[in-house]
Image 1 (cartoon, rainbow, N blue to C red):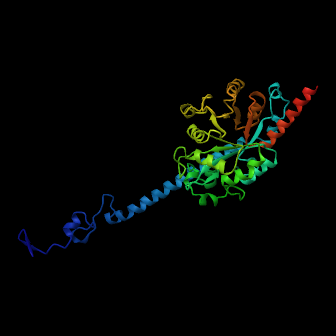
Image 2: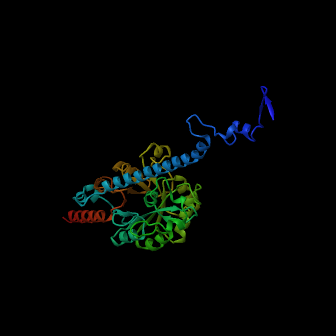
Image 3: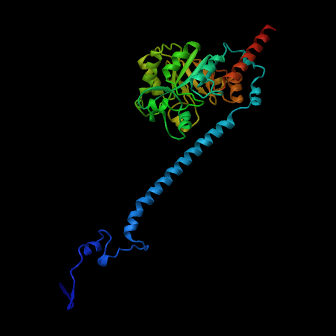
Amino acid sequence: MARDGGQLRGPSAPGASRGRAGQGGVVGGGEMQRAAGGRPALFKAREAPARAARRQRGTGVWAAAVGLGALFCAALVQYLRVPSEGQWAGIFTPPTEIFCARRSRPLVCAHGGDSAHYPPNTMAAFAAAVAGGSDCLEVDVAGTRDGVLVVLHRRELEQMVRRVGVTVGDFTFREISQMDAGNGQRVPRAEHVLRKFSPHVETLIVDIKVDGRGALGAPKSMGAAALELAGATDCANCILWAKSDEEVRHIQSLDPSQAVGFVVMNESSLDRLEGRDKLDRLAGAANVAMHHEVASGSVLEEVRASGRRVFGWTANTPYIVRKLLDEAPVDGIVTNYPRPLLRAIDERMRACLSEREN
């Protein structure tokens, strides 16, 4: 018993003083300590993780919604850009003198195959392009997380997994191979595409995609892997190019005889910062992948003075097709729409021949 002010009081309850110190939220007399909001602190502590989990779930849902919204907008923009049959009629016009002065017929390079009618970069798309008369294919090649080369563009991958910001290097080959590339098509290995289709076209372009992730994410790794791919498949008509000059230079250092190219574009400050707007670079590279906005008669003359071929990309509207056929006569045209382009070239070639005979 303890005496307080002359009065007797019972022994202190075990843990009472500890409760006042904030352990267990218990005070003398067994009452729960109340926070400023009126709720017992014990309940507050239990509710905090639940509130945090709800906030996290809400943030995740919001991020997913934003990602899906971005994908929908991108798909809508792409849909609105697809020319109608009536718009394509505008490319079937009489040839200009510039077109008829060509030394050879331009190559039609099906971008990801006949991707206007089949899922891009699939075996079905490439087969349709070859069957339709395309004499050139452009194949987007990227490396999986475990170092397997597949034919897949980041843009298509984002649509397949409905997430923005992902790259091929984020997934294993097993994961990629189980994805639906569209209409039940699967993402093919790059080796299978080159072996099957390179014998049936004049030129097969390997567009090397570098994302800095996965087993082939280190600098120069994708260039070396693409060179090995061309050799393993006996692809003597392969051209290897990339937006990364470093990868192309590395290929040249490993095998100077391998046909390579570099990309010319001037769409952004980053392009200019990294020198992609420069025409005179990468000595020994005999091919130039030129964005259609850069292409002009004077620019082509400058490039051809060094003995290089020019491939214009990407001709997916009637305006761009007419420009690359009749105003800036490139040697090859990269397009998602090889069928109308082939027909337009055929009609122009016949008209030019008829004029010469008359």
